[in-house]
Image 1 (tube, rainbow, N blue to C red):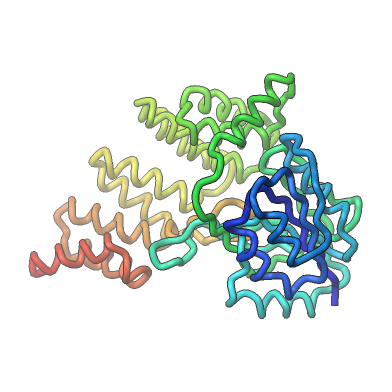
Image 2: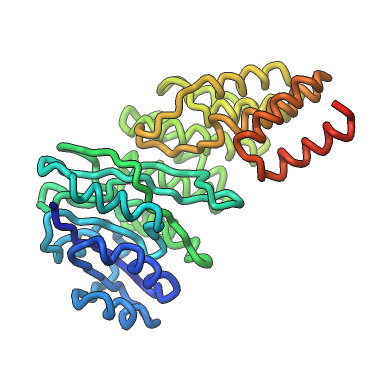
Length: 357
């Protein structure tokens, strides 16, 4: 059975850290904590779990900090988690089983990362991340922000999920400031950094700047396909905020120049036509979304609701606007089978009941 070092970088995480460590401490063989300047009780709390606590001078570089944490590990694999992550109780047995059965040839284990949840806690946004990484110099983090280890070698995909359960808000400006400092210092952002820099600008409602960065990224011959597709979505949202709706539609359609359609983008195109009163076109795109397979292993961001619940619900709206309330009710019932607790479905149900449909 392989041995695992849990390697974490932390700062002022007294609200989260015990919950995180309690969820996984008994399943790993070593815990490495790298503190980047806590002024609260974080160091005191983690010292109850491990003596391997190190101080690190923060350099506005997450990859450097994570590589430092990995350098302190002595086990066969390094595992990373953030302080506000948790391995839920229903995942722990699978975690242990994987550890017991893992082939010695495995270099990287990819696990689901669930970062958003609906009203009953069901994951609504997830993607795969490298989670266990062979402890050797071949694997090192890159990227000052949104750091990554590119999967290579023998890679295993697991359905085990780490859940991101943040309590309270962090510093919303941190990542943007790091990028701005990099640019001010003369750094030339590589394509992946351009994509994430564009995202930070979008989140900060700097739409014109974001469009400029996204367009530069989309025109580049380099860059990961999944990032290109997501950039089309974010860039289209920027155009909408700027009042350039035709440019938004063109950018959404542009996503299909990079790969086959994704249900997430089809739902956005459907929404565009729905909001513009073109219900027949909206129906086409929502039905297209329903026909598309969900590829969780592409590495891209996955919105599970875009493959069933969202198109069902929106088809209900479209057919109601078209005057076909029988079909509208049918699609609402299909949405209800996906999420019988959602308020939109329940509201529609009461609406159809009041009409005697």
